[in-house]
Image 1 (cartoon, chains in turn red, yellow):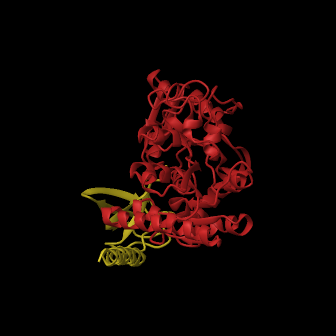
Image 2 (tube, rainbow over the protein chains, first blue to last red):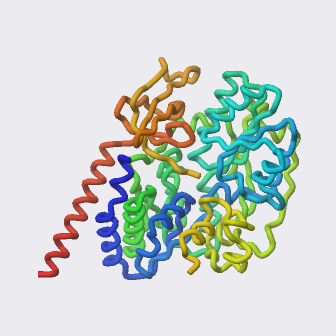
Image 3 (spheres, rainbow over the protein chains, first blue to last red):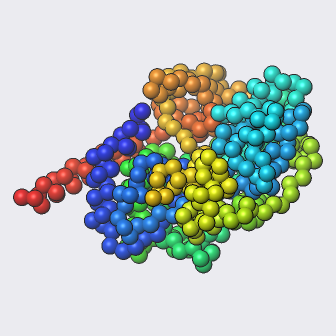
Length: 362
Length: 90
């Protein structure tokens, strides 16, 4: 695959690892914010290749993991209604709330469909005019524009039996919360690559200016990640935190202005609860007045009850980067990918699932 | 969830880039073809361009020039390292 394979070459990976080893002379703590980075780091075995002093910590960047269990309970309750068809990204389907998951609801007879694109849910709506099709709208900046464009298309085509369950979140706000947490000591951030396509690399400037954190926007292939880690280590060791973009082939400073405009047409910021982090001011999105008819929470008067975390589960601390999965008492025994307790184990991009799957348990 | 991949444009369909009639591109990688929507890209791609695809939409055009420069620098770095290592051995 062009523009993918070139960044996976073992000669380049070897060279960059060597360079990092030569360079590294002090402990550096780096948080990879994005769940897709976490997966790539584990999948390519990059953790084992890093010099001892460089510690990678996973952050709150898996949208599935940070969706509160009360919201997941509401998804499951909705799926149980006979007049409703659920359309969702596959990541969401196995996540348990306080009780069931969507997968269990499906097994019990609920109509739950995994879609590749939010646009696919419009097709389902057109094929089932007597049902209400609800797309579970979860995701960060990368995904939200695709949902906004789908709402505009539903409005254009006057599809009346389509709604979304708005649960989208936006990225920089939780990073501010994390940086202000004295328990979390981080020198640098591996900033999310595909969120930045939309938001632009300048989105992280405040982390450098206000918190003195080194920030590098990184791609997802092994050489992208190693190059970005080198850039971060250099910044930290030289004591000059800055904002660098190591993913210039797809990320610009200003981002995708058109996509952001489309999001602004449809959505408006609201305070939002993050699993593990609590409520964060203006870190979520809801539909604007003009598009409220597409909001299932309003249309079916859905109540979201605040809910507690499963007993023993430390997902909240893992999402904040103050605990690693093995620090959790139920990791690997009561909580495994086969029988997950917390969201970080169940999501394919969850930190605990990545630790478990790629043998970091040993 | 933020997975996105580069795919090459082999056809562009539709008349305009207006919101009322969004264009579609047929993209390809490793023999897989897919129709994707162009609502979100700020410039219309040409055939042969690479688009970054996420959830059925192109979220951006790939900057091929930037990618080539980046790869060239990486390769130079690798070659430089190799020479340096050889130099150390002799």
